[in-house]
Image: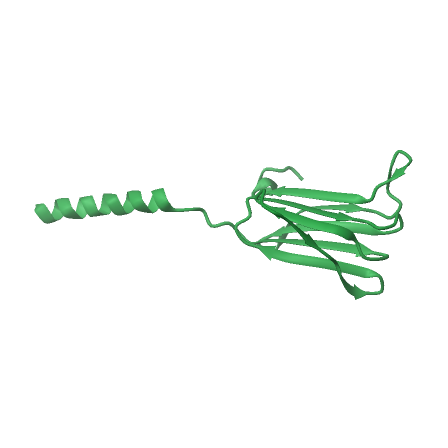
Length: 134
């Protein structure tokens, strides 16, 4: 009887400890930035509201530049890049566990009214693709 009680107490403590201390492990997040007709500038990212980190594209071919980075433990991610000239395109893609979950792109000569657009910003909150429709 005494052993039975000790077993139950041990089981309950183990059960409570396991659920009170468990942090959900998040999938790996990767972001990818690509520009054509020249390198982008002002590439930055910020993970979980922390410090802003700058990056530059790496040439991979004839006027094509890219940058990619894998990050762990991401709840929220902000990525930005800036075109140098209006004839460039710049694209940002975000992947979760190897699957593209969000992306945006500025096409060459893309405008808002009569003003050319140069800055592309993309924010991602972990899990948002699971509730989006489309």
